[in-house]
Image 1 (cartoon, rainbow over the protein chains, first blue to last red):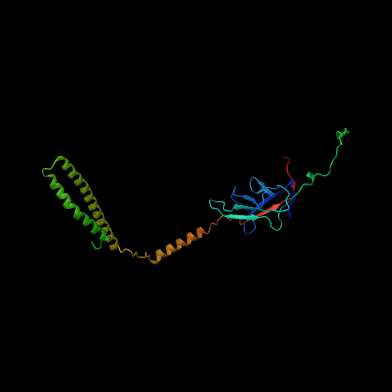
Image 2: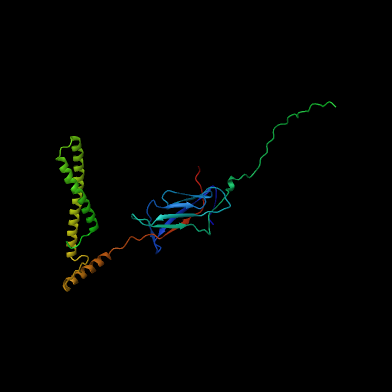
Length: 121
Length: 131
């Protein structure tokens, strides 16, 4: 399970492959990433082929990412897709460095109490 | 003329002409009588309108005659049948050989292979850069 805390991100690399497993290209500019829950993770990338899965906020829920691209290098469009392993989703935990670890008390010098005025019986 | 492609339309047009032409003749005759200038103007207007209509009717009938003549020529040409092109054996062998050569030439080329899958790989978590 790819787990990170909310102060971290995870680098990714995307590869396109032919049916025989050999590396292939996709139409430049056609790669589109999406996340199943943008309150947990987002995707940061410029070319779509490399970038980071960014932690957004700690959450008990998990999230996955998906990607589409155009395999046709010409004028046509052939859409291929990829999805991160749903059995191994992303988890974002709290960065312990940002958690409070101690409580500090400070005290001022003594001051006179306020004496209440006597009451007439 | 062997066949009129649209006899109903021709009948309709001829009927319209049969109504118009006596009207036109009569209107011309009326112009030759001693009628007032205002009445002459009204009569002349009707002559203009009806002669224009008559001219258009005759134009359509003439066009129909031309279509019928072309239709006759098409039928005389054997339409709709169009016989197969027949070649002697030498020419047929030459044509078949050319077809084989073209197939061989097309077979030289292959389409650009396309990606069929996208594979993601992830590294280890890293600290985000300071904001």
